[in-house]
Image (cartoon, rainbow, N blue to C red; front, side, top):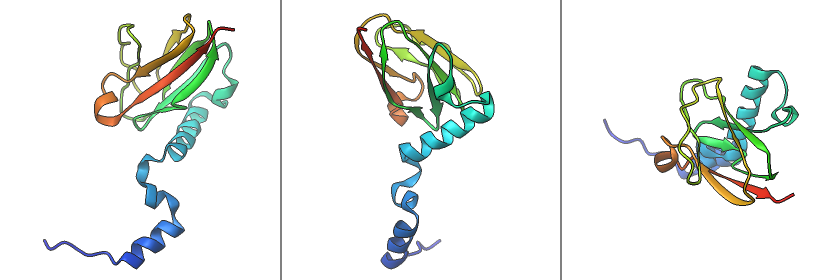
Length: 138
């Protein structure tokens, strides 16, 4: 099969008309908006309305949002809103969690102030699925 050349003008028009085309499917804002829609479909309310926890969704190999700031003692709930992929969470030197399959969640309570990286065990190297929680002392 011969490669097909796409005229530069066509690519320029597509990029101007559809900004997501220029970015590809990895635009975090678009992915996180989709993740929030899936969360609302699953739970029935927006993630910011969760009681007693801070919600981070896991979707298309992204944590949404990827960086959060919470007061010490906060429980973060990672909710897998993907349709087919499982994810885990590994916070700092803590052991990696079990896998959360679609529609499942994982929780961790942050008791030490400071910046704490976390990652998805199966996807951090290949998909760069990494996040950060900044825990404030008050």
